[in-house]
Length: 434
Ligand code: ASP
Image (cartoon, rainbow, N blue to C red; front, side, top):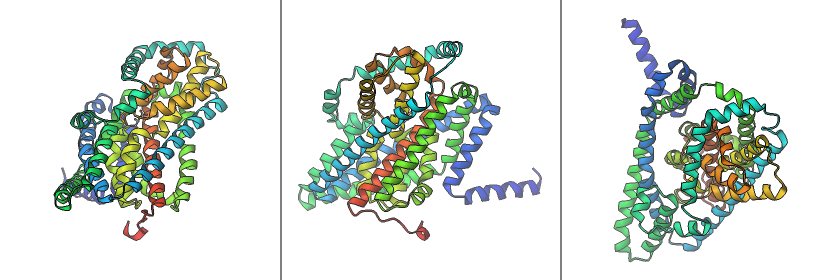
């Protein structure tokens, strides 16, 4: 390399290093999307870099939420407050999710994504994705076998907390951590303090670890996006463009109407929220996983949005599992799309069933890639629509998964801001300290 080339590249490196992390992530995302298709197989080969990055983050999640939840509850010393926060969170999540399904259904009915689809196109899509669809259906059947709603309530209580940790069973982990924290408040000070001190340090260490891991985020994001773009290209998107545009459009409208209302109620200007939070949205978009985004969401909500760590550490992990507004919208639009293509008439009762089923289906479904489509099969089954029709949406699943995950994490943070406000625990950092 010539010396002036060397200085130029080292200048570029210094410049990139000096950029804010979210700018780096954004550039990585755009570069990945643009370079993915021409890179082809090379892009697919570097995917492990992206997967390794997700593993690094998911690795932090369990110790991070456990330590912060236990410390938070143990220092709370006020069970009434905990009950109040819990109740408000659950009510908000149920309301937002049901509203999101209704939004999706409304958009589907208004714009008719599945109306007038050519028989030939229909058949070719069905044949092309039949195998993939069968695999999803199998996954859904396995999930359904795990039990009914009653069983689900029982399952929140983990028989073995270590198993819950090993399986990243968030609801089980949250239940155990809360109870552990509460129990600690009942111990004498000299017994309680060492445990809380240790967990406090664990929590601090995990936060530092997240910051370290995030330094390689641009590489991970580039690898993930490039491999998606290389694998799927833009062809499939084109065929199903209308459905994708309606689904993504509805998610965007929901994000910029419903959340601003929540934020205004909390006294936080929506523009400020989105300016400080968009890094988390980009991140969720790249990873398609609310769980992998959780550490960053916690960090940004506390440091940049000013949510107290007590509220964030309860509301956000719960939301990663329970509150999936993007997924709910996706289900509403997809049910209408599939029903229209399959020639299935849906009455008012069917629509109500979809709202209830899709809301319930999103609760307890883990925040991992692709789970929204698995739970979609539960809703279709309830309506009696043959599951083979799921083949229609498999091809564009990934791009929708990315979008809905970005909406999912935004919904959790908006709720955290609102709860923090109602508890008097929202201290929005001024612009200059940000
Ligand atoms: N990938 C989504 C999430 O992690 C869930 C889904 O598949 O809809 O939030």
